[in-house]
Image 1 (tube, rainbow, N blue to C red):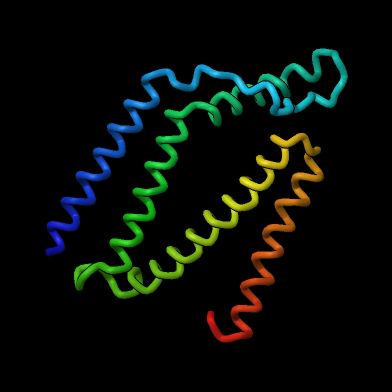
Image 2: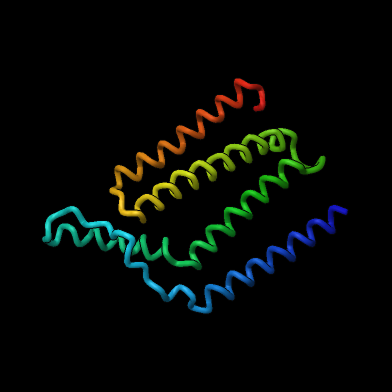
Length: 159
């Protein structure tokens, strides 16, 4: 039974990877969004700003490259899968490793969710024309609201 589940997971992973390669290879990202504000250098117009902008554009190219994003997602998924295997592993895995894998899974999941909520809110606010500080305020507000909901659920006894 476990072998069937592992095999199906492997087949679905290969299908997802093939679909990702297919979609990124088709060139469907050839559009440009003109309403998203572009960050300004904020410095003088001399050569001092060139090195800052050069490193920023290289990082931005990596962040906008769908192949890099797909590779990072694949590595994160494999990392979560490896920790999950350690968590539910049999008698061949040391007990200390199995006991530590549960909190690592919870911490990793919480980190991904909190980062997703903050960055998603920040990016959406920037796309609607808000300044960086206003967008950061909205992202922090969403995280604060999530914390208040968590405390309320804990007080009611649902967590």
